[in-house]
Length: 415
Image (tube, rainbow, N blue to C red):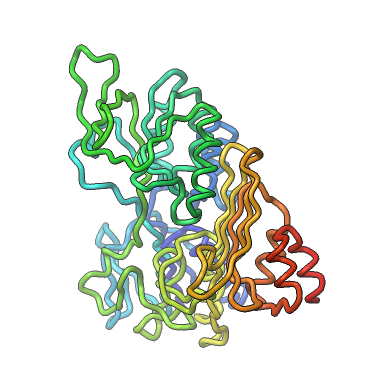
């Protein structure tokens, strides 16, 4: 059997390894889409902090890992897929045949359509090449403007400060990390960052970026909608991502925001599957179909898709829980499931602004359906178990309404 996996992030790598475990004789080809060995984007902050070298970002640290498993690695991009003839066409014109195909092409950074976004000292922070460019320019004493205070921006924030830069964050939303925090949590995180020396402009927008005049000390001028322009040595764009689906235009594979899949992560073409940030998969909490774009989901997708490719759809995907865990200069924040609440639901809040601690539980009847927190690092596994198990809390629901910190007791009572 000939398997081709397109995309070498966590989802694609896990899929390759899972296929090999299930089929020792299969021909497996991993097409990376980049010139790098498979690496983890989650390791980029550690690379920027110089805690690890480039090799430390690699998903598998043994250089012989893939060859030892008989997995062929091709560092090239796929330009087209011909599903009627079962082959992929690489950027160099090579055509490779397959019997089963997995698309795990992940996502790409999205830049706002503003003048100056492609200037030399403006970079995304998504790939290892982006990280190299940032590391070369984010030096002690330099002025850095970070566009976006979402998840991507916040995971590199501490790395930039440790490089000794003067950092200003510009966020269009009215709070930090608006896709995983409510007003209270986002406001607390902003206060925390400001206490560490970060300047944060929320409800603000970069309108353009210019090469500065020769008389200016900084090479860039960042123009804002409501505030004076910011001089900068480096601008980092962390304004979101989108699924890598452009290469599918003109193909027979159905896609929307991502590639449309069923409960087996199978596309509308029987021998083609999709996983990870490119797959419009099932959300456990509300049974909707959308792209989650988080690493735990990508890993789960890769394993399940691989099983189904080898074992003819024997493993149904029941949906992934939307979960985020973020460390921002030592302040841990989390969100799980329907953290924003549901219509007709109830919530329980524990707030200690002075110590940057916040816990918000969301209920549907007597089941926990979501949680968001700051400064509470315990009980993460417990929360996942209560939500995934749809545990009926009974009398413990009212106890948690009075004291959200008793999650462990509630979980133990459910066993």
